[in-house]
Length: 196
Image 1 (cartoon, rainbow, N blue to C red):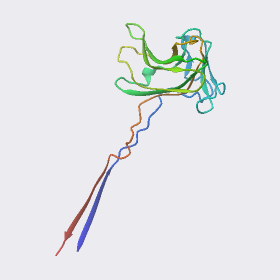
Image 2 (cartoon, rainbow, N blue to C red; image 1 turned 135 degrees about the horizontal axis):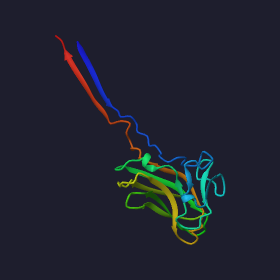
Image 3 (tube, rainbow, N blue to C red; image 1 turned 180 degrees about the horizontal axis):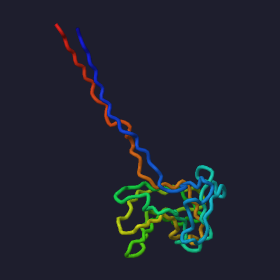
Image 4 (cartoon, rainbow, N blue to C red; image 1 turned 90 degrees about the horizontal axis):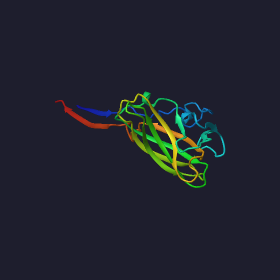
C-alpha cells in the first residue's frame, strides 16, 4: 500500500496599496477643498475648461498672482499625515498660462524655531501648450517644526510672476511595492511509505 502526501506551502503577504495623502488632489470635489492661495494672495478655483483638465472633470487654477512666491498650497498640515524617515513619491500635473516656459517649483514649507525653511522638492519648466508631469521622491525634514505645508509656485522665466498655474492629479504617497502578492511558493514534498 502506498500513501502519498503532498504538501504545498504558499506564503502570501497582504497587498499593500498606496494612499494619496493630499486632500482633493485632482479637484474632483468641484471646489477648492484642501487647497488655497498661498498666504491668501490671489485666487484659487476649480475649473472644467481653459484648459481642459488632465484627467477627470476638474483641475485647479491659481490666478491673480503678482510675484513668483504667490502660489497654491494645501491647507492641511502635512505633519499630521506624514512621518520622518519615509521616502514619499510626489507627482503633479502642471500647466501655466504662458507661451514661454516658466519654472514651476514644488516645495515644502516648515516653521521650526530657528525660522521658516523652504525645502524644494523639485522644479520643472512648464508652459501653456500641454500638461507636464512633475515627479520626485521626498523625505520630510527632521526638525522641530510642528507644521509643514505643501505648495507650488513659480521661480523664474518670462511672465512667471503673473502666470496662472494649473494643477491636476497631485500625489503625495508612500510608493506601492511592485509585487507583494506572493512571498513564496513552497515546496512540493512527496512522502512515499510502503507497508509490508
